[in-house]
Length: 482
Ligand code: CS2
Image (cartoon, rainbow, N blue to C red; front, side, top):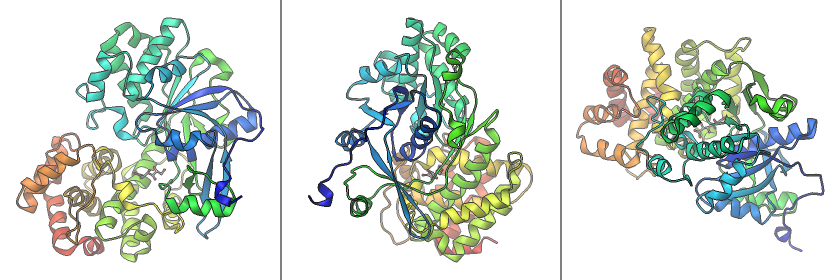
């Protein structure tokens, strides 16, 4: 039999019963939450099998179904070594647009005690500037009128409604997206929607529901066709849906789960290495500003400078000096670290993680959805610096880099494939303005991203950075930040 004709399948190990529905089953959760949960079950038992849900496309389900939802994680070391692990904790994958009723049926089954989410920033259908549910979002408009929802908040609310009506406790909503105060954000979105549908439901959710915040961290680049081929050569079976990841992982979770389930409210995440804490906020701030903030800065400016991956970008000495300066001069002074955390060591570790050449994390991938990412990754840090009277030219340049990027033309005059829910609007604003200053002013006027106050304060420094970027190119502009 040829190597690539052997299929991956499930072992004979006992299967835990389902206890979790996961919304948004992408590579990140499969390389992250699923691993912690599987380890927790191995260490301490419990029925915590995962029913995955894709809210959009059937592709993950299609690739996993033929291998009984088992897949491989490929952990890539900096020295080129790879470690393979078969993951069997996912029991099934549903595709919401094909059968929303099946998704609701699982979510309202009382065996399900937790709904985890990785639906990306835009999946919460909130207004990034206010954090409130956007009632004009087309999926929310749909979900207000239809009992079979489309959006993540819609599924949460309708399932919670069924559980209340059937006399079951709610599930814990455990968000794993990179958003500040992510637990509070999803709670507010759910309560906003429930309040519109049935105020007594909102009251019940507010009293009984639990929405712990979490900080999640593991770099997980998209799987490429050559990864699938290489894996088949190395392990002797064919996996159509492996996930690539770095060795590092960190999950900090607020220990606040639905009380009605007692000791059975959650898997033993601590046994699997998660940190269970009372308040995640300091960890989230640190991670969003230190990691995601510099990731986005490197993504826009690195892409413009012609770098394909983060590892390539930081292998360029000009960018290496830039990111180290960003951490020490502009980011670390802007927030209070969690108790006991040494930020210098954290920054050093980040630099090592970024430099891992085996992790081919494309600048283009990270550049996606910038309108949804910029506020919590970069703009909050800028605001705090401005309040403290601290200059932050590197972050201003990053904002200008984003503006150049969403303008849709790179430094060689080639089109950029900009993926962003606001892509068309951003492109039009940039195209319609004639001068650099007018382009910056037009983009600063996008209130989904910039508050009026920040727009005023950024006008001059970002225009100057944009001008330098346009005239000298990203690499030179980055080299001038001292
Ligand atoms: C990245 C993150 O794609 C992105 O925007 O910044 O996905 C990043 O890799 C993770 O948050 C790392 O934990």
